Image (cartoon, rainbow, N blue to C red; front, side, top):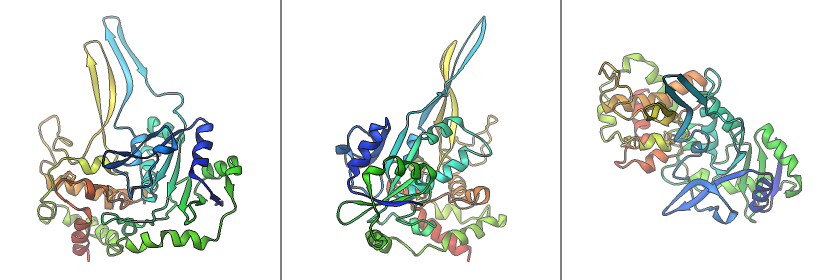
Length: 345
Ligand code: SF4
Ligand code: SF4
């Protein structure tokens, strides 16, 4: 790991744009701050704890055409829409929870099954995370193994310093190379104590009451006797199945493949889907193994706290709190965690 100091964020912005990178960062949109493409550093805002959407939107888009097809009496023609290259992109201002979530997505889309659309975009993307100096009531990264200054999944981590500069650390080979390439904009690192002091408040403000919950939850979920527990309807009674929690989640990855077009021509699309929708597991026969909302919530929760760990030893929830902030009925995953953890004692 290399360390240094960045005096001005604008220097990094200019270095990346000068190198032909597209910049994605936190930008105000109405009352929200969202990750969006930035055309100038003036659009970058620091007034956010956590953006409304997650950075996954730029690597795993909501909707993506994967092939085009035509068919007629002469035959069928299929054109693969995977591009040779995707634009080099920097996601700047990702929080450490978002960067950590990216590692979980990497495991889903690369390895056992390779999704070239994801992998090519991912390879073209650099993650410049910014440590949290504040937290809100919905944040709970420390209860899922994260930290406000965690570097997992980030190529570069910037920690804001009191003098307006940033403490710089590299988290990957890509980050090291960038630090070397843009050497002229980095100064030697100040004392590490200054960096640690910057995140102290966030660390104190974050919840620490559920740090043991993921292990207890896992124990309970591992016991198949609990699979059909009558606790679920009570614990998740409020949920309306709107799916909003899955769309903002940095580790939710479900998608559906649909053909769109007219007679004789069309495109095949990969669209985000959500395990909270009632038709998500609807079979062609009409049978639906998750025909009630508690069963769908059980699935989402099990994916987060058991399946991700069993399959990849990675977190399925990074504690970003987005699902809590977005839920229209106040269904709070930390309340579910606390209740299930108690059952797992
Ligand atoms: S956002 Fe809330 S209501 Fe909507 S699916 Fe998620 S938990 Fe249910
Ligand atoms: S489940 Fe909720 S808190 Fe956990 S990573 Fe997803 S959106 Fe964030």
